[in-house]
Amino acid sequence: MPIPRKKTPFLRRLCRAAAGFVLLAALLFYGPWESFRQIWINTSMYSSHFKFLATALYSQNYIQSVLEKNKPAVDRKTDKEKVAVAGGDGLYFDRLKGDYFTGAIIKIEDPRRLSLVLSEDRRGALLEDIVEKHQALGGVNASGFADDKERGLPWGNTIVKGVFVSRNPRGGRHVMGGFTRDYKLVVGTFSDDEIAALGYLWAFEFGPLLIVNGEKSEMTDFSGGLAPRTAIGQLKNGAVLLAVADGRRIDSIGATYKDMQTVLYANGAVNAIGLDGGSSTTMVYRGDLVNTPSGGNRLLPSAIVFK
Image (cartoon, rainbow, N blue to C red; front, side, top):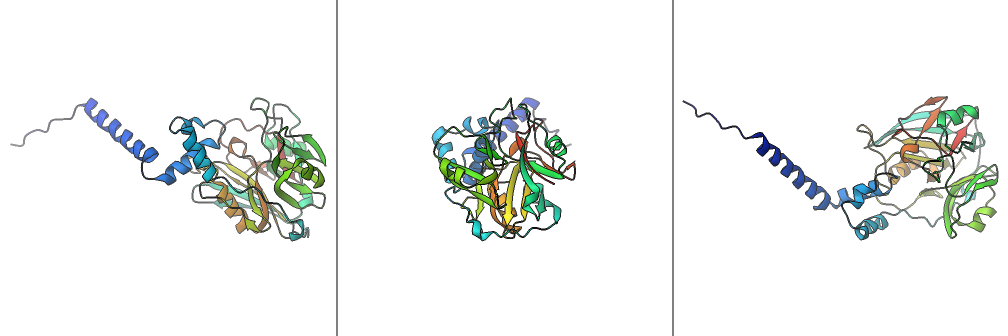
C-alpha cells in the first residue's frame, strides 16, 4: 500500500518562493552580469520619474561611474558642406522593428516643409492638436519642458523663426540641433556666441549627438538605457528623417541611443540628434497618432511639424 505524501504547508512554500526570488534578485543586481546593471542604471537614471529604481540599490559613486562610462561623445560639429539640399515632393512612412522596440519613421524629401512650433499654452498641448492648429500633415515632439507642471515652457535654448524664444541660463557649451536658413540640419556642441552666429532658422537644445558628418558618435550599447525615443536626421541630399521608438510596454520595452543611431544611419542620415523621449515621444502622420506613447501625460512644449 503506497504511503501518502505529506503536503508541504502553504507558508513553507511561500517562504521558499520568496527566498528564491530574493536570490534571483541578488544575482541580477549584484551578481556577475554587469551588462544587466549597466542597462538597469542607465534606463532608470535617464527617466524623469524612475531614478529611485537605481538610487535605492546602488551608491551614488557607482551610479555616476556607470553613467560616465556610457556617456555619448558630445564635442563634435556639423560640416554644412557635406549636405546639398536637392528638394523633392516625396513623403514616406514606414514601421520600425528592433530587438526590444517597435516604432515608426517618416522621410520628408524637402526640408523646407518642416518647422519648429510652440504649443502656445503654458500647460502644453497634445501633438495632434499642435499639428491640426498649424494645418500640418504630421510631426513629432521636439524639445524638453522646463517645468513638469507647466509643460508648455520649453527647456534650454529654443529658436523659432530665427528668434530665441527661450534661453539656457547656464553658460558654457550646449548640445544643439536645428535647421539653418539654407535648410541644413546643423548639430553639435556650441557656445552661446557660436549658436547666435550659426544663423539658425529654428533650433532646440537637446541630444545626444547621434551622427555627425556621416560618422556615428561614440557610444556604448547601454547609452541612455531602454526608453521611448524620438530623433531627427538629415540625408546628404537634404531629405529629413523623423523616427520614434515606443517603450515601457511589454511588446516594446524601449530603445537605446545607439538603437536610434543605428536606425537613422541605416536609412542614410549623415547628421542626426536625439529629441525629448519618455512619455513625450509622439508621432502624428496624416492626422493620425501612429505610435503608442507611454504614460498619460504627453503634453508638449514644442513640436517639429511638416506640411
